[in-house]
Length: 228
Image 1 (cartoon, rainbow, N blue to C red):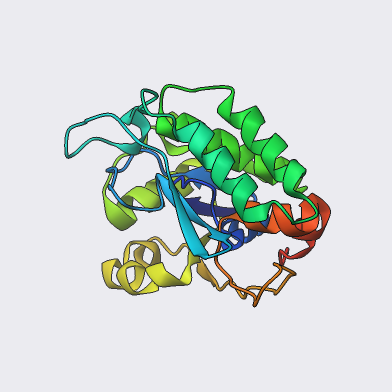
Image 2: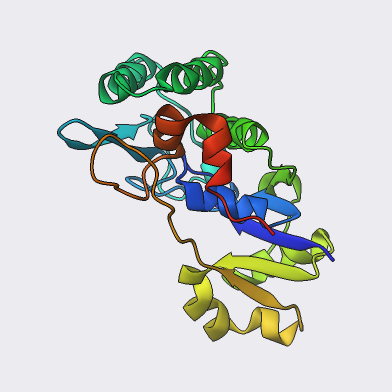
């Protein structure tokens, strides 16, 4: 049995993203679809003392139809310094701040030219730190054709999937398209239920995963994920 999950690479994903990875055998970073400005592809939230703080990776100008894999990071803006400063300010009193900072510094120092290289590395390295053995592969390496459900199905076929694990939010369009039903490939829908952890204030779910790391460390963050 081979369970395949497919998601666009996002910046500092929330814990549900990693739970989806943990429940699959192969996780595909969907980097061959159109980039969307002001989406989770280039930004995410942490919880500061005065509320949510958005961390955004600036990108260079690009064609409207540019794919995620082709988007370049704008290093003429000091976003790495700002993000590190924001994390230090937000979690300065939390017990595992330095674990979060060390992770970010290690990944920022690589300075990849493209956004997908940054987010892909962050996701892959975080999965390792969370003891998730799932194989992670960019869709651009698979060179699959098709659009919408047909594209996802082509990826699953290329990877010899026996089950496609999808987020619940995709159910409506997947069932409307009917591609997986026609191919007789089972689709299972993942539903993430956040588990509260100490944040130093009333629990706020769906923050970037680095929030959990700064608050409870890597081992306890890993324990927050429902695995197979």
